[in-house]
Length: 124
Image (cartoon, rainbow, N blue to C red):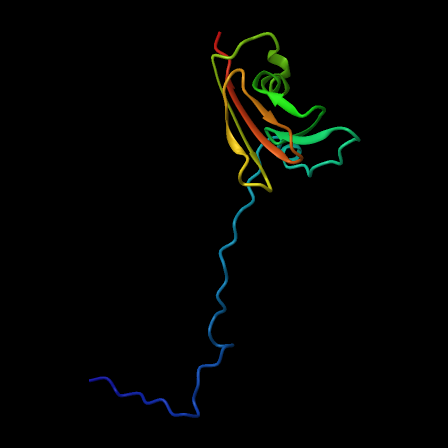
């Protein structure tokens, strides 16, 4: 039989005896080119609107931007080629009401801080 242990009122568990709860550390994983995709938003010139296309900030003029223009900006080396399939999604960082997908022929109003993701497949 085990001896009974009694705890007196003068005995207490000291916080220094117990290990402090520590959140596990996350390793920082960086992809090639992560620094340029994570760049802070630069200041726009007068008359231009800053939007982020695939993580790169671009200054545009006008009040709207089209599906074709976004494809051309996102893939400048593929100009003149039509993609096999492309998805263009957008959202505004501050206003949750401005979100959606673009299809060929669609336009979206330019607002400061608009976030656009363009994924295209150029099959040969």
